Amino acid sequence: MKVIEIEGNRKLEGTIRISGAKNATVALIPAAILTDEEATICNVPEITDTDALCDILKELNVKVNRSTESVVINPREMINKEIEEQFSKKLRASYYFMGALLGKYKKAEMYFPGGCSIGARPIDLHLKGFEALGATVRNENNKYIVEAKELKGANIYLDIASVGATINIMLAAVKAKGTTIIDNAAKEPEIVNVATFLNNMGANITGAGTSTIKIKGVEHLHQCFHEVIPDRIEAGTYIIIGALCGHPLKVDNVIPEHVDSLLSKLEEMRIGLEIGADYVTIIDNNEKLVATNIKTAVYPGFPTDLQQPFTVLLTQANGKSKVTETIWENRFMHIPYLKALGANIEVKNQTATIIGPTPLKGEEVIATDLRAGAAMVAAALIAEGKTTITNAEHILRGYEQIVEKLTAVGAKITIKEI
Ligand code: UD1
Image 1 (cartoon, rainbow, N blue to C red):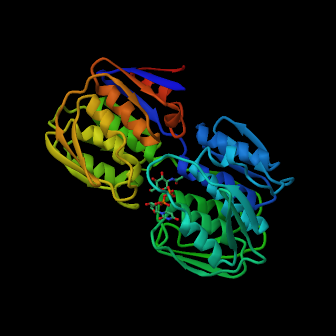
Image 2 (cartoon, rainbow, N blue to C red):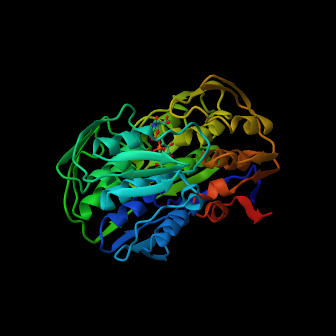
Image 3 (cartoon, protein in one colour):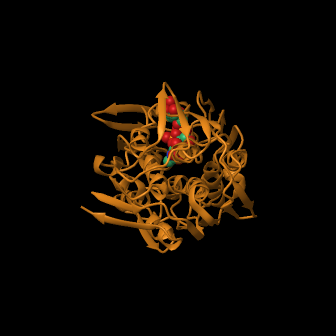
C-alpha cells in the first residue's frame, strides 16, 4: 500500500503545470484501436490509469510505444479477444474498449469494469445505446458479450447526460452504416477532445460539446496525431489548494473556461484571482473567506469531481456552507476524515453542511477514492502537524507526479510503500 505523509500549515508559492486530462486520455487510448494505422497521442498524463489501459492494448497485441508525455499506438496486428477481469477491474474507463471493439470488430467481450466506489455506477445507457445500433448484449458470469451482425446508425436519447455513455456510443457508431444522433448527450470538454481525435482519424462527428451529437458512419479511419486537453479537474484541485494556502500559486496550462463554475464560486468567496489566457493565479490576499453553497451538475455546472476538494476550502470559510451532490449517491466518504482533522460537517441525505472556519490538525486518514484522496491532500496541506494518508494509490490514478508538483512549490510531502 502507498502512503502519503504531509507536514502541513505551510504557504505554497510558485507554479504548478497541469498535465493532460485523465478523463480524455482514458477514452482516447481505447479509441485509437478504431484505425489499423498508427495514432500518436501527446500530452498523455503519466498516471496509473494510463498504464492500465496500455496493458489492455498490449494484451490485445497492439503495439504501444510510450515516451514522456506521449503514446504511439499501432493496432495493425491487433487480436480481438476477451478482456480479462484482472485488466477490466483496474479502472472504470476500461468500458470504452466495449464501444471501440464493437465499432471495429462488431464484437466485444469484457469482464465488468472497476473504478472508484462512489455510487452504483450502472452502464445501462451504454448497453442500450449499443442495442439501438443493432448489437445484442449478454451478461455471463460477470462478463459482457456485445456483438452485432451489422451496426446501423440510430437515434438515441440518453435518459441521463452520461459522459461514459456518450463517448462509448460515439466509439461504437463511428464506423456504423448511416447516421447516429445522440440526444441529451453530455457536453464535457473531454467529449469534444475525443470527437476531435476521431475526426482527425477521418470520422464525421458534429455537435460534440452540445446536447445533440451527429455521427455519420465512415468506412475507414486513418493515422493521426492528437493532443490531450489540460486536465480541468487536476487544475481545479490545485486552484483550490492555491485558495487554501497559495502565496501566490500559479496554476499553468489551464483552459480557464473549463473551470468557470469553480472560478465564479471562488470569486464569490472573495478569493483573489488573476485569470490569464492559459493560467490562473491565486493571490494570497488574507481576506476573510465568505461561505457559499454548491450543487454538483453536469458540465458546465459545478463538477462532482471537484466537490470533495472544494469541501475542504469551505471548512475555512466564515459561516455555514452547503454542498449538494446530485451525480453520485456515495460521494461523501471523505467527510468522516475531514471531521477527524477537525472540520465541523454534517451530512443529511445528499447535502453536507459545513460550518467554518475551523483549524485542522494532522491525523491518520484514508483516501477512500481518487477525489476523496485529493481532498485529503488539500486538507493535510493546511493542517497543523503531520497527516498520514493511506490507500494513496487512488490518488496516483488521477494526479500525475502529485508529490513532485507540490514539493516544487514548497510543500513537505513524501510518498512511501508499506
Ligand atoms: C465520468 C468521469 C467521472 C465523473 C463523471 C460525472 C470519466 C472516466 N469519469 O464518469 O470522473 O465523476 O463523469 O461527471 O470520464 N448513469 C446511469 N447509467 C449509465 C451511465 C451513467 O444511470 O449507463 C448515471 C450514473 O450512475 C451517474 C450519472 O449517470 O449518476 C453520471 O454518470 P456518467 O456521466 O456516466 O459518469 P462516468 O462517465 O462514469
